[in-house]
Every structure is written in structure tokens, then in C-alpha cells.
Image 1: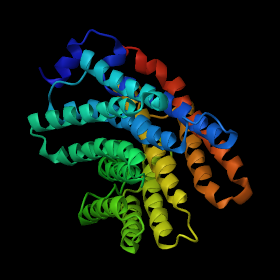
Image 2: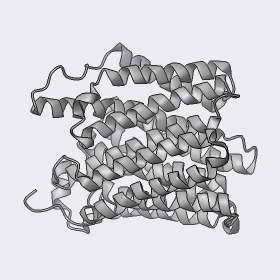
Image 3: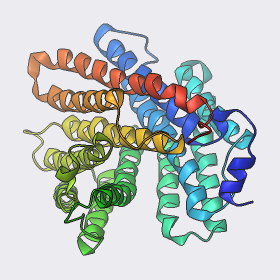
Image 4: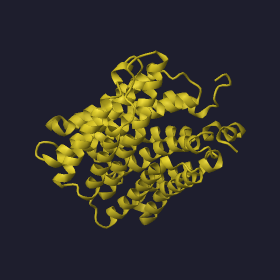
Amino acid sequence: MPTAAARRAYRGPALFSFGFRPFFLFGAAWSALVVPLWVWSFLAGGPGALSRDWHVHEMLFGFLAAVVAGFLTTAVPNWTGRMPVIGAPLGGLVALWTAGRLAMLFEAELGPVAAAVDSAFLIAFAAVVWREVLAGRNWRNLAVCVLVSLLALANVAFHLGAALWDDGAGERLALGAACVLIALIGGRITPSFTRNWMKVRRMEPQPALPGRLDQAALGLTGLGAALWAVLPLSPATGAALALAGAANLIRLVRWRGWATRSEPLVWILHVGYAWLGVGLAFLGAAVLLPDLVPRTAGVHALTAGAVGVMTLAVMTRASRGHTGRDLAADASTTLIYLAVNLAAVLRLAAPFAGLLQPDLLMASAAAWTAAFGGFAVAYGRMLVRPRPAAA
């Protein structure tokens, strides 16, 4: 059955009619909880279970994995024309993700069982993506399959590292895969959506078409991410990351994002991609000039900035488009965008703030929770209800 026909034939709960619905909603709600819980634990001596490792793990393999799953379970059927993962199979994936979150909360009591339960979701999800892309002969997106597999591998490495050697390799591999995903997918949708928006308004010149610069930016991003995963302190790694940051910022300028300043639903994609370039540059500077630039500045420019902003950009646009709403940001959406960027700026500034660092951490956490909690509240109703009949 073709993708569109399969969706029309579905008669179950609206929440499980598209992959983006449960994964965006639950991922955003979980993210809105994880950050303040971690800051409370860090600043006020909360429970030992809420350690830094738990915070890092849940942001990368809980929140980010949910958003990636929501996007790909919605996009892959459109890429391949095959049956979408909806209904009971989608519910099974959501249950695996939820089990992982509970397992990590009780990791101290469950021991190695928690790692096994948590790892199951990304392994199963990677298998689903590989199956659909290969069966649909969608060779263009084999790179997406590889990146999802690397995210699953990074999760396993994170658990093994915590138990055996604890060098952060799993964390670096996951963040590197996320950066390449943003460069790859963000590099497709940002100029494409910008071009479509400008065409309707007959605006010229339009974003530059893909070319060698785009390929170079992707290649440098992949190289920098790979080197950082295995050689995090090497000057070659710092140079590759800095070059990747510069290449992505040059790439971004060619997409003419300033022309979309009147529509937040479009310019937020450019802001999210800008954070990728800035984050890679900061991370490279932290490797080359560790006495001047803290490593956490680069890491959080990528996590709170690139990942946080780009995920919300994709979540809001996909949610509005697939539920029949106008592709225009309302007031609540614009406030969400402002909040997540404020959270990123404050988190980037915190390592440089000296005695003010705790205050900036709390303010950043509050802004992050406002952004993702705000998404869950503002978009929750459209995510759990059927698409309006007239849409």
C-alpha cells in the first residue's frame, strides 16, 4: 500500500498516526524536565542518580533520539514510498524509548539491565530505518542510515565507557553524528524551504543551489566530528573543527536567511544552522586554545545551540505542516524560538562568567524549559488530535 493510502486507511488513535506526533511531544516534555532536574542536582546536591552522565545521556540518547525518530519515521516513508511506521509498530518504538528513560532513572538499582533496556530503542530504530531505505532503494539517504547507526553505537559505547574506561567517546561520537545530521538534513531543508518561501513572494535572488562548497562543508564537518571522537586533544582535530565551522557559516550566508526575517518559521532554520557553525568553531578553538576557550563552551554551543534550536525549528514546522496548520509562526511559536536561543546564549556564556556561572546556569535552564515545555503545551493539542477535516 502506498504511503498516502496507508495513512488514509489508519483508524487508530491520532497520536500514533505519524511518528512525529508521539516522539516530538514526549521528547520535548522529557527535555523540559531533564535540564532543570540536572541543574538542581548540580547546584543543590540532588539525588546521586541525576549525575552529569545521566544529564548528558538523556539529552543525547533520550531527547535528541526522540526528535530524530519523530522526524525520520515521518520523512522516510515519503522518501521511499513504502508503508509508514504507524499504529502498533509505532507504539512499540515509543514504548522502547519510554522504557529506556525509566531504566536510566533507576540505573543504580537495575545495573547492566538498564544499559540493555536503554540500548534497545536506538538499535531497533536503526534497523527500521535501514530496512525501509534499502527496501525502497533510496540510495541517496544511506548516509542517514549510517548516522542513525552511529547514534545507536554511541549509546552502547556510552554505557561501556561508563562501566570500563570512561573517556567520553560515546558522548563525542553521538554529538558528532548529530552535527553531521544537522549539516546533512539542515543543509537540505533550510535552503529548500527558504527558496519556496521566496518564490511565493517573488523575491530575488534566491538561495544558492548546492555545489562544491556544500560538499566541502559536509566533508569537513564529518572529518572534524570523526577526529574529535577518536583524537579529542589533537591540534589536527581543532583545525578541522574550526575549518568546518567556517565552511558551514559561509554555506549559510549563501542561503540569504536575512531575506526571511519577517517569517520566524523560516529564519529559525538559519539561526539553528548558524549555531552549528559557531559551535564547531568554538569547539575547535577549545582544542587549539584550551587556556582561553573552555571545552564546555563549544559543547554547549552545539547542544543547547545547534541541536536545541534546529530541533525546535524542525518540530514546529513539521507539526504545523502535517496537521494542516498554516506554515507561519504564531506568537507562542515565536516566543519558543526566542526562549531556546536565550537558553543557548546563556549556557554558552556560563563558562566565562566566573562567580555568575550558577546564576546563568539556572537562567539558561529556565529558558530551555520554557522553550520545550512551551512546545509541549502549545503544540500538544494538535499532536494528539486528528488533522482537521478541512485541512
